[in-house]
Length: 241
Image (cartoon, rainbow, N blue to C red):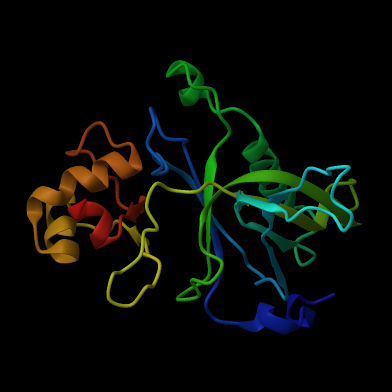
């Protein structure tokens, strides 16, 4: 089956991404350094968002029609997204297997978090262009993989993954006070001549903001910035804070 047969939103030129980050250290709610930028070759044809609120009611024998429930608070948002992987045009490829492993590793504790004595799986951010309705920091609650096509050696070359994301609430809403829109991080691929200072000046008008870029991406040596490296650029609001 040709890749072009995948219908729906998969034809969009703007690809959705799942940015996989180290968990933060301490009490921060800002994701740590970027581990991998997982680009979805086929955009989801459907996203499922859900949210619940908690209410509590304690039955009382003296009340005939039941007691008025007490609102306990909102639950974090949850999102379910389908990730379709296909290498049917290259039966000897192991790309599908590697991509599935990357998703499954989102449920495993990272080495750096163990070293920091705060064991945690990665934190992730799902983003699809300017689509911010479903953009939030989350952890991967579950990954369910269905392999549907195999190469001649038994290597999976097509898979559908159901990924369940559970929001990690931040201390602040992370919103633009004038528009109410979620602050947006961007991903920049390093080109020859780039430096953290030049990126900070171009992005925020302040070369000293390079430290925020370094911290977000877990960069220990700001002088070593290999070409092709993908950097997460924090939103301007986050840098000011």
